[in-house]
Image (tube, rainbow, N blue to C red; front, side, top):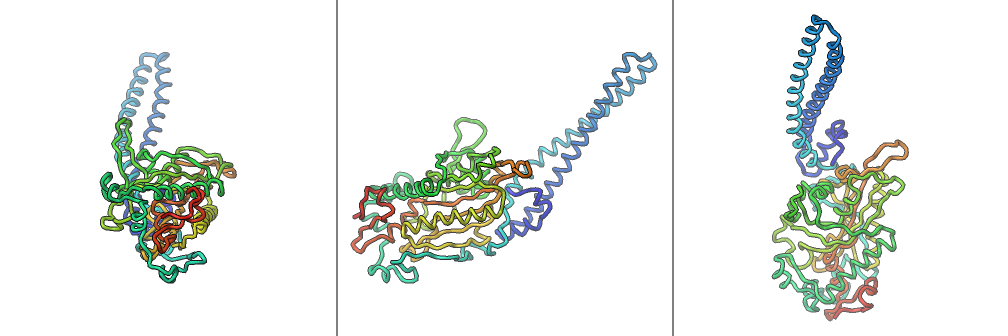
Length: 452
């Protein structure tokens, strides 16, 4: 959620932001119109309330005087009291009209407020879609050059993760589809072991090596948490809604990332400034409908409805320089982990048209996947400033100003499996169809060195 005061003061900033992100700029003008009408109605109501209160204070003394007044004076005082009461009743009727107007305008204003995107940072390149993203850098292990084909690097033609895993009994797509429909799978044997190994490795890496606080979070959450983290209203078509049997006035949804639960931990709280930054990591099952991707990556483990993910979230002070520093640091954690795994990868600067509504900036990390003959996205690192924290009302008391201040937040994937299994399996395949277990994962696989 954007700062409404800042929008009033700098409307062109938000109009330009809408255009840069391929959203309707007239939304800003409609929001301002509703906001102005709402504020006017609220102001007029406040004036009427003040006038009513003033009349109430005038009636009291008149009533007191009537007790000691002569008959002639009493009649005059009664007339004055009656006139004041009549005026008060009229003010009450006028106030009700404004109350009705406020009740009508406020939800309309708030709905538009939720729709306005966070403007991208000025240094984010302009672009229409992911096709306009800009490569920042790439990293290759010493024994592999992504400028050459896999066969030139390894001396044999690569197989896809589908063929490799099927032959080794690591996956069962047919039974997965039988149980849950399209884009479903069953990891079996060493496939499930490797899946757990990468999650445990990533989780331990963030908690034991980098000091993040481990937390379990619900994956079934209230709609207010999805809205608070910015996944609603944009992106609502990607979420699975669950009928709420309790009838408690809210809907429940399956989350598509542990970010939702981690950010919800401190919703409506004033956090101790001395405890910032708050650094959390979780491993959770995630669900995405993949709406709008019909016929796209339907085979294999790249685009699926259910997966498990280790996520990192940071809540820090409201300082742009600190947010930028944490963004770089969180990306560095993932780069270090991928290098430990020996996986070639590149960093992509997402353009304005690929940021989505929440992000001021986003960097994607893509791993080399031989079966795709190129890179495939495995991580996204987002810098959101106060967009989520304003919605969730996460604050801290600024030690200098002594005022409650909206915090900043960031998030980044640590490892999402089974997608991350694609580069692991395809990069570590051998000519005989076996798969070498990356040394970093062997402690989590009973120290076996090879599958198959």
